[in-house]
Image 1 (cartoon, rainbow, N blue to C red):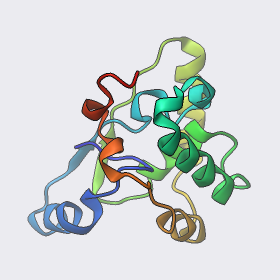
Image 2: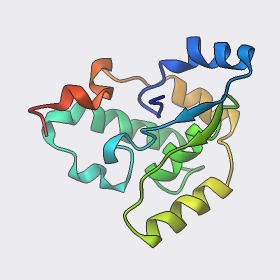
Image 3: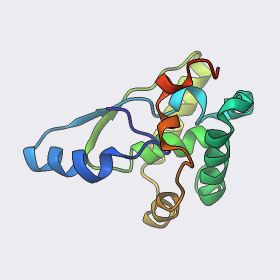
Image 4: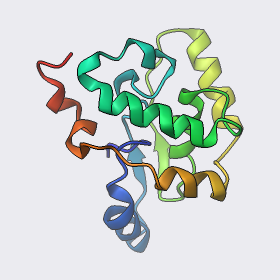
Amino acid sequence: LPFNLLDRQMIAGVFPQAKQQGTGILARSAFLRGVLTDNLKDVPESLSALKGAAQKLFRECAEEAGSLSELALRFNLSFEAISSVIIGVRSVAELESNAAAAAKGPLSKECLRRLSEVSVEYPSMVNPETWIGLV
Protein backbone atom coordinates (compact mmCIF):
# COMPACT_ATOMS: atom_id res chain seq x y z
CA LEU A 1 0.00 0.00 0.00
CA PRO A 2 1.15 3.59 -0.48
CA PHE A 3 1.92 5.06 2.92
CA ASN A 4 4.10 7.92 4.06
CA LEU A 5 4.26 11.06 6.18
CA LEU A 6 1.95 12.90 3.78
CA ASP A 7 -0.33 10.03 2.73
CA ARG A 8 -1.72 8.50 5.92
CA GLN A 9 -5.21 7.56 4.76
CA MET A 10 -4.64 3.83 5.44
CA ILE A 11 -4.25 4.31 9.21
CA ALA A 12 -7.94 4.60 10.05
CA GLY A 13 -9.48 1.84 7.97
CA VAL A 14 -6.93 -0.53 6.50
CA PHE A 15 -4.50 -0.88 9.41
CA PRO A 16 -7.09 -2.03 11.98
CA GLN A 17 -8.69 -4.37 9.46
CA ALA A 18 -5.33 -5.93 8.58
CA LYS A 19 -4.55 -6.42 12.26
CA GLN A 20 -7.94 -8.01 12.88
CA GLN A 21 -7.38 -10.42 10.01
CA GLY A 22 -3.76 -11.14 10.93
CA THR A 23 -2.58 -9.72 7.59
CA GLY A 24 0.71 -7.93 7.18
CA ILE A 25 1.11 -4.75 5.18
CA LEU A 26 3.88 -4.07 2.70
CA ALA A 27 4.28 -0.28 2.53
CA ARG A 28 5.60 1.52 -0.52
CA SER A 29 6.17 5.15 -1.44
CA ALA A 30 7.80 5.96 1.91
CA PHE A 31 9.77 8.77 0.28
CA LEU A 32 6.98 9.90 -2.09
CA ARG A 33 9.21 9.96 -5.17
CA GLY A 34 11.88 11.99 -3.41
CA VAL A 35 9.60 14.63 -1.88
CA LEU A 36 10.32 13.20 1.58
CA THR A 37 14.10 13.19 1.22
CA ASP A 38 16.95 15.66 1.14
CA ASN A 39 16.03 16.12 -2.53
CA LEU A 40 13.14 18.25 -1.33
CA LYS A 41 15.02 21.29 -2.59
CA ASP A 42 14.56 19.95 -6.14
CA VAL A 43 10.77 19.66 -5.89
CA PRO A 44 9.21 21.90 -8.54
CA GLU A 45 7.25 25.00 -7.56
CA SER A 46 4.10 23.35 -8.90
CA LEU A 47 4.27 21.00 -5.90
CA SER A 48 4.89 23.77 -3.37
CA ALA A 49 1.99 22.56 -1.17
CA LEU A 50 3.74 19.21 -0.73
CA LYS A 51 7.10 20.88 -0.20
CA GLY A 52 5.68 23.15 2.51
CA ALA A 53 3.98 20.27 4.31
CA ALA A 54 7.17 18.17 4.18
CA GLN A 55 9.21 21.03 5.63
CA LYS A 56 6.69 21.53 8.42
CA LEU A 57 6.69 17.80 9.23
CA PHE A 58 10.46 17.80 9.54
CA ARG A 59 10.44 20.86 11.81
CA GLU A 60 7.99 19.06 14.12
CA CYS A 61 10.47 16.25 14.83
CA ALA A 62 13.88 17.54 13.73
CA GLU A 63 15.30 16.81 17.18
CA GLU A 64 14.43 13.13 16.76
CA ALA A 65 15.41 12.56 13.13
CA GLY A 66 18.56 13.86 11.50
CA SER A 67 17.03 14.23 8.04
CA LEU A 68 13.69 14.25 6.30
CA SER A 69 14.39 10.86 4.75
CA GLU A 70 15.18 9.41 8.18
CA LEU A 71 11.93 10.84 9.52
CA ALA A 72 9.99 9.40 6.57
CA LEU A 73 11.44 5.90 6.93
CA ARG A 74 11.13 5.77 10.71
CA PHE A 75 7.55 7.04 10.43
CA ASN A 76 6.64 3.98 8.38
CA LEU A 77 8.47 1.73 10.83
CA SER A 78 6.44 3.18 13.70
CA PHE A 79 3.27 1.27 12.85
CA GLU A 80 2.81 -2.32 13.98
CA ALA A 81 0.51 -2.96 11.04
CA ILE A 82 3.40 -2.49 8.61
CA SER A 83 5.39 -5.67 8.12
CA SER A 84 7.92 -4.26 5.68
CA VAL A 85 8.75 -1.06 3.83
CA ILE A 86 9.90 -1.03 0.21
CA ILE A 87 12.46 1.68 -0.51
CA GLY A 88 14.51 2.49 -3.56
CA VAL A 89 18.16 3.44 -3.37
CA ARG A 90 20.55 4.79 -5.97
CA SER A 91 23.83 4.13 -4.21
CA VAL A 92 25.52 2.16 -1.47
CA ALA A 93 25.64 5.39 0.57
CA GLU A 94 21.85 5.74 0.38
CA LEU A 95 21.43 2.11 1.38
CA GLU A 96 23.74 2.56 4.36
CA SER A 97 21.96 5.76 5.38
CA ASN A 98 18.57 4.06 5.24
CA ALA A 99 19.85 1.06 7.19
CA ALA A 100 21.21 3.39 9.89
CA ALA A 101 17.89 5.24 10.05
CA ALA A 102 15.93 2.01 10.32
CA ALA A 103 18.22 0.80 13.10
CA LYS A 104 17.12 3.77 15.21
CA GLY A 105 13.65 2.24 15.33
CA PRO A 106 10.22 3.80 15.58
CA LEU A 107 9.59 7.45 16.34
CA SER A 108 8.44 8.48 19.79
CA LYS A 109 4.72 8.69 20.55
CA GLU A 110 5.09 12.45 21.06
CA CYS A 111 6.69 12.91 17.65
CA LEU A 112 3.95 10.80 16.02
CA ARG A 113 1.31 12.91 17.76
CA ARG A 114 2.84 16.14 16.44
CA LEU A 115 3.14 14.69 12.94
CA SER A 116 -0.52 13.64 12.98
CA GLU A 117 -1.49 17.29 13.41
CA VAL A 118 0.14 18.32 10.11
CA SER A 119 -1.83 17.73 6.93
CA VAL A 120 -1.51 18.55 3.26
CA GLU A 121 -3.55 21.48 2.01
CA TYR A 122 -4.57 19.53 -1.11
CA PRO A 123 -4.78 15.81 -0.14
CA SER A 124 -5.03 14.63 -3.77
CA MET A 125 -1.47 15.87 -4.30
CA VAL A 126 -0.02 12.96 -2.30
CA ASN A 127 -0.87 10.77 -5.29
CA PRO A 128 1.96 11.08 -7.83
CA GLU A 129 -0.52 10.26 -10.61
CA THR A 130 -1.90 13.79 -10.13
CA TRP A 131 1.53 15.25 -10.85
CA ILE A 132 1.19 14.78 -14.61
CA GLY A 133 2.04 18.10 -16.17
CA LEU A 134 3.38 19.40 -12.84
CA VAL A 135 6.82 17.78 -12.94
